[in-house]
Amino acid sequence: MDRVFFEQLAMPLFDQLYNHACWLTGDRVEAEDLVQETYAKALKGFASFAEGTNIRAWMFRILRNTFLTSRSGLAAQRTESLEDQGGTAEESVSHALTPEVILMRSQNEETLFAALESLPVNYRQIILLCEVEEMSYREIAQVLDVPLGTVMSRLSRARAGLRAALGANVSEEVR
Amino acid sequence: MMRCGQDRETLAAYLDGELQAERGNALEQHLRTCSECAAEIAGMLSLRRSMRAAKTRFTPSAQFRQKIQSQAAAKRRGFRTFGTLSVAFAALAILVAAFLLTRQGMLRGDAYREIADLHTGDLASANPYDVVSSDRHTVKPWFQGHIPFAFNLPEFGGTEFTLLGGRLVYLHQQPAAQVVVGVRQHKISVLIAQDSAELATAFPLSTGVDLRNSFNVETWSNHGLRFFVIGDVEKPEIQHLAETIQSANP
Image (cartoon, rainbow over all chains, first blue to last red; front, side):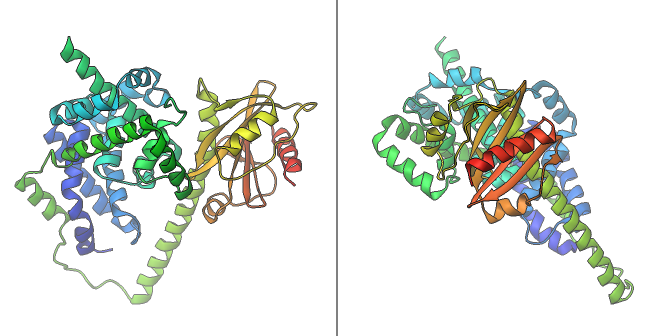
């Protein structure tokens, strides 16, 4: 595979990858490091990239794996290792939230972003991949390297968590 | 779970365009009559619309773009005196073969991990079943209302096995029935899905019980259905349960 080909395939993803890296790390300097390393690794491993496979999922997967071994990625994993094992507390909160409240709250950009940022990074990322990058469950499974069933259940818990976070903001303001 | 019994995961999958046509159509019918679910969908849609702003929240600086661009850009080629064509082809052929081999291995590995995950997912969950019953006449009809295919369960009375319950799961993005059977202190999962070319590729048929992802697994295909029996018990017990299931689905 040659480098012209790599450039043609990988550079159009630059803005998306950068935005995603900022969401993951919460820091522009770290995000730049992350994106730079992602491109370096992708270029190095481009020989193993088979033409016709999904370049976007491939690049996002490299970004994700690079993030997981970075300082903030490791820190996030230490605090969130139990996140996939249940979400009953979140669910019970989200049930009290009517769709109307969600609708009203989510239309306020800053409230929505704050709620998204408050989520564990695994939840934040899966919501971004689904809603913002508009990836299919299959693509998400490739990026995160998990089975499809896990994509569905994690996405469901992540959404419940987002609802709960939107609701938590409501009750804080009422107080 | 919504008050009408519809689960949120399905509503979300519908919105994400991930429900199969049949289930999607059924859900659309339901949305016409269930205002709670319709409002839920509206809420999700609105959230999705608002989320679009997250796409362009962070934009890279021109400098940084330049940096990556030059890192990725093609260097003017300086060396082109790479051996003879035959050497290049031989090297390429080896690369492709190696790639195909590892890829196949990875796919198989991943595929069985999905089965193992479904099984352990049940073990770990505090509320593992959609239908809890030791009576096959309760479990079987429940599935008939939830999955687009039918199968038979054997009578477990008089055997070492006890029926514990069942739940609807997704295997390779297809709805599947998971029936959980107890033997002594162990649980064994029986997974049943409609057979497809995709399933056949991911899980090649084998004869007898195999050790995969530290579980014993037996799988077979019969009349368009694909069966998996997975658990941490010894091979003969997996095999016995497989035979019991097979005798009920001749």
